[in-house]
Length: 100
Image (cartoon, rainbow, N blue to C red):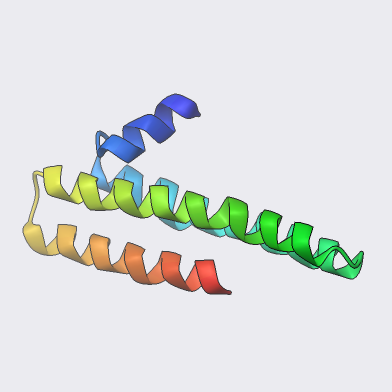
């Protein structure tokens, strides 16, 4: 897991794996879990802890995933259009996941 995160951060992963594995699927999983924890903690009247868990875990993950996709797009051997679409789709998707 840590090795994969390091590879992601450096942009050493193929673009498809960085985008679909880490940004799309990983983003939905991480943000879904942290949203559930956020709601559970709020229902227990623990708003500060809810914020720390809800955003303190998901936002850093989203930043790492976005940086990884961005860097992987730089090294993508295929068409530039696909790389740019992946970059901006990851940026929009992870921004939406971060604020919801």
